[in-house]
Image (cartoon, each protein chain N blue to C red):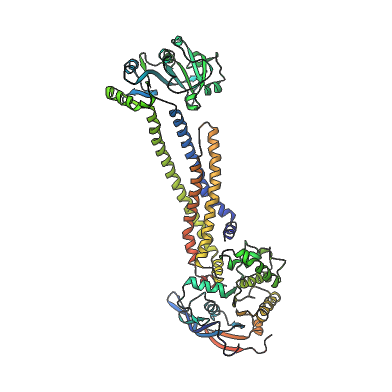
Length: 377
Length: 236
């Protein structure tokens, strides 16, 4: 009966194709959208998972790029129990590199206290030095920079070459990688140089990066800072960030799924319409099947198989289209990930939509009166 | 008909009424008929005389408004749709005027259609289906789709399909109605052979007077009533 159902779909190829197209569009757009959301989420989680310790920002801060804080907080926080070192940071988006405006990819200028840094374990994320050297205290006040691997690749830089950021020339002393494109798209420099390059107010920093004696004690130290200075600044453990991002992305995913569900309802209505038309067209044929001994259930099963196949074909082709779209998006520079759950989930979903949409036409077909169908011979 | 033998199907005082808007149309009016094994029953009558309705009721496709139907002596009025379908599948074959073959399936697959819902039907019935197709003279046309076959060949596929469940009784509604007289005669000859050699019982509804010569019994229907039943002792 499966073969019969399949062959029935091939009677009106264009019509079947159009109802399958409804599912293809739904599934493909769902996969493309969710893969981008998942991709961005994975990238941010990846970046955040490399971060240890805590971050201290002004109260009611939104994004570190838009806030500032007195530099003196560094020394205040150094004195708190459990804090190994509190590193003032400046983070700003670069306006231009090599004279060209920076696009949406958002290259960041990161200013670090290179004197304090020498006694710390890295700058806050565990990068790996690929070429050149790390900062040393004597770099303070000099126009030197460490650039991420992405910058090296994008602008063809190497250790010793110059890079022009916002119109200021800096000499590259080291190239690092973190494995995350998001973090590798940064230009690190001594904090004075960053203040000059970005025009950041004197005596101010973007936030304080707090490194801990014992990274597993992050929550205790965060609580201590918030207890002491909670009316002026807000400390957040960096492991908390990834959780918060997770929540935000889950709600974005939910929104996408809601949109996709609406698309599936539209696809289902299309299938119901097509199947009803095809059932009514085969009025006589279904009557004949009943005459030769098919039960109502047999007829119902045949029609359900047909809509099942519409779901299967639509799901598989839609998933393939969605994956292709996701790859195309990737080539534009946005990260996208098609997880196995997404792939299997959408195919299963479209099969379910197909079968559900077949129920009503199948019911109509199974209740057809064979005598009515055969009378007008 | 052998005297004293029990009928396969018997209808007793059967009437069938339809509502057409406000008016009630009587398609069958108090009809009684017995069908015995080996019968080649030909029902003739003008359009609207109730032939098809009568055939659908004896063929267990339709239910009467009044009267009783017995299959092997059992009253089937209480059977539900599913049991009636099972009776049709096990006992009855149908041949239609417009063949009602499935256009996407080849001759062999069409013959297998009645047993298609049974599990493993292909393995169980395929050899038999091939044999039947050979018997009806379509041994070299088994893989052809209906649109690659002539009208007469399609009707022979349809007859082969009616035989796949090895039925006791085959109903044919105007089996020669869409055929020219030559192919019509071939189809009639095939049904007669199946009746004489294969011991299949036939109930045929027709306009075609030439079929009457082959009948064991002729039933004349007019305005929903049987007006004459004739035994045919000079059967061709």
